[in-house]
Image 1 (cartoon, rainbow, N blue to C red):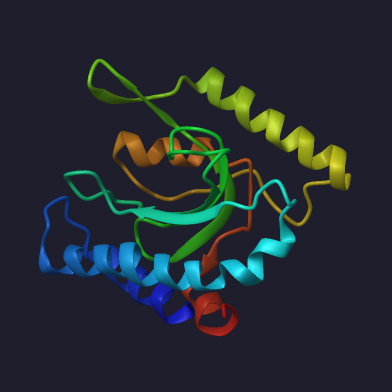
Image 2 (tube, rainbow, N blue to C red):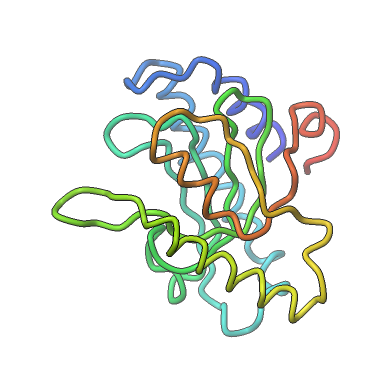
Length: 183
């Protein structure tokens, strides 16, 4: 998994909203390689979740139509989060400049409205993320060692909403950390 994360980060500085060869490779790495590697780990991850989450799945996106600056891959319960716009899930977010990734607990940041994907209001996002943080604090007494802020460095409106949906996350894992710490 570490090598796949590094390869995706290396392609990030070559971002284009068009389906260039580099973006095709990034899409393959995200939607086939990384998703496949995480699916292969589900039997090892499953025991960490409550038995009610016996339907874990993995999915990713590098953009719908045009490519996104900040692709992601999520681990989710099919019943609790049937699509990325609903529920809460574990998500890997890639920084736009390729300098690292974040491992976070997030929720949907958009809704379909009038045939378009629109951002959820900041007020709604704050309500959702505050609720999730309160549940975590109630269960474990603290958010430590996690942070509630991520900075993806994207300029487009949609990936900027991803920063607002972070409930808790591991602080930026820069490329050096990827080279030395992820398995």
